Length: 276
Image (cartoon, rainbow, N blue to C red; front, top):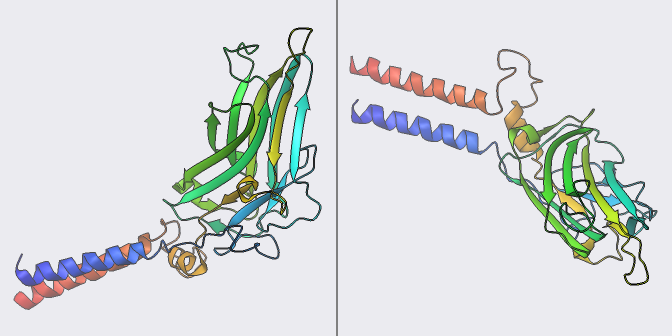
């Protein structure tokens, strides 16, 4: 291969790299300080932080991409006294539900932050737990389907700051607006023990701080998603072609790579013809 053909090949490959990298445009990252969120509670690249609300009994946890809810409490709690077990299953669903499809940037991070208040016994093999207790399990769900879960085994009585940096994989990138609303679920099994003359009672408590203006910033529950902006989505989906034609079903960005590859092949062929 002569110098000219090497140059043409190099330029074509560089164009391919530039084309594919442009499809992962940097998403907007929302924070409590930057924006209160979208007016309708739906996600966008600029309003990409999910905020959490609920009642004091922790029986109605809900979320939206707007940090205001006049009806929400600052904090919700479940508890149980005596000798028994508190089985925690708190599911926080979007209200309103997701109305349009959302695409996240693969390789970027989903940033989850919660403050919990805990008490009781939940570590198996210790105190009253003999296989029936459960550490905190935090799940990210697409509607009712769990797509990621993390167990926390180093928590203690009192306030615990929960953080989870979850990388976006291909399975987490696409969210169907008709049935896959963003959902967070907390699961835990905590034992309580009644007191006696010598020892105080040890109630089982699970408490969650919601998003509320009276809470300090680090207490506000939130999940920030790396949502692609409209330009990046159009590049990934071919400008809204609807997936029809010969390109339907191809991976995002693959069509552009095929096109650049074709240009490279044509350039090499032209170079061969000129030499002949």
